[in-house]
Every structure is written in structure tokens, then in C-alpha cells.
Image (cartoon, rainbow, N blue to C red; front, side):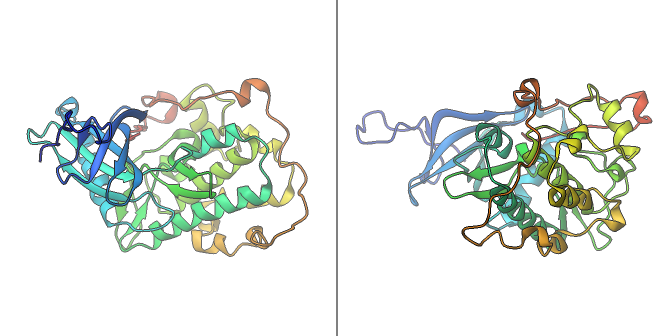
Length: 333
């Protein structure tokens, strides 16, 4: 379906650069973000009167990469079936008449991703971090108990989004998600190395890999440091992860309750609790009470170099040091 071009003669019209085929959604020229696969613009839903994200993918750019296209369309099909307050919602999807561009409208979180938001707001209480963490778990519980089960496989703080004015957190970027059957087993090696569970490298894993990644997210939220930032290559991360060596950032976690909770998430697969079990953990008790006593510092302040480190590692090819495993990060950023 073709997009509709705004009428320049209409002086009362919104300053859209294009309108969707239904006439409901308009796209502004404001770019919210761009990745290897898609560009995200600010949009507006004229029926509901709310801002949205207008995602746009130039399909011709990937005409020779069928796996990437298949993964992209799989994400869109998957998003259309999901409805949960802690999962980014998909509202509409269409391709242009010539098939060159895929457009899809999703909800937008006003404060961006959690990694950037946390670095912008450095003095955040443990109570607030627990509330964010609980919402991530609620989203994971929904995915993991979905029929069929859905494994995110690339959960990290840059794929979690927040509406800062109300403290609402939502999981997004489901481009690497796997839909698995009754066995709950998946086999592809995909993800962001710093957040990948050891069993992911062994190509035999279940939804528990998301719990491991969630634990790393909590660690990053607490310390303001990306896990394994002391490593300068994927191969070094791989060796530490598979040997069970924790990130150096763990040493910065002062609160024993926080440290114990993170360790539970990073445990061996069979000892790792499910999202549902973690939601009942004493770690979350009392966070909805008002007037709670202040907690001690969560972690030693990171160095200036670490605090300002904007690293989001790009995809790195497999290394011989990684046992010949094909480590890839086919993200839909």
C-alpha cells in the first residue's frame, strides 16, 4: 500500500512528511534512532492523539540477505500477537507498493532506552531499580509462559525502554526472539556477548538464558557499567563466561541483598529460577510501601572513563579462541 503525501495547501495540517495508507498515522522527519537494519522516526496517531514510533526498513538493502529479511518479518509477525504492558506494542504494518520499504508503527517510550536513562539519572534509589527490574521480569514471564514459549535472546539495557514520567518499563527489540515448542529448547548462537549465558555458546538452551541476561541488566543498572567492560574482545568475554568468571563489576556491588539476587540469576541453568519464581523473591518485598528507609550505596561509583563509556559492541565475527562457534548479532536495532 502506498503512503499518502501530505497536502501542502492545507495550512492546518500537521507537518508530516508522509501519512500511512489509512490516514491515521503520520511521520515527522525527526529521527529517534537508527541501526544496521531500521530507522525509527517520531510519528503521531491522529485517532488516539498519541505519539508513536514509525519504524522504516529499506528492504532492497537486504535483498541478498534472506535470513535477515526472514528474521525481520518474524519480528513483525511476533509483535502483532503480543499484548502486555511491559512489552512494546505493534499497532500497524505495511509495505510500500513497490515492496521496497517495510513500515511498522509501534508504541514509543518517551525517555528512550534504560541504559541511556540510567546514565542520565545517576542517583536512583534501590527501590526504583527494583521496580524497573520487576517490570522486566513481568515482561519475561509473559514471553516465557506464552504458548508457544518465546525466548528473547538479546535482553540488555539498550533493548529495554522506559517512560520516565511514570516509571514504566517495556521490553523491545524482539528481532532475535525464538519461538520454541514444548521442549523449550533452542539452538542458534545469537545475542550480545556481554549478556549471553554460558549455555548459549553450547547451542542447547531454554528460556533461562533470558534470566541470566536479566541478571546482567540488574548488574548494569546498579553499577552503571556494562558487564565485562574490562574485556576488549568477544573471545575474552567468551573465555570468562564459559569458565564461570563473573564480570569485574560484581566487585562494585556493595549491597549483599542485591549481590545475592544477581548471583541467583547467573546460576547454572538448572539452579536458575524462572521469571515467575523471581517475582516472588523477597528482593521485591516492600517496594510498593511508602516511606521506606533509605538504603546504603548500591555500588562504588564507577570511574569517569567507565561512567562515560557509551560502548554498545558491534557484531564481531567468530574467533578461533571461541572454539570456532559462529557468534553473531543479527540485531534489528
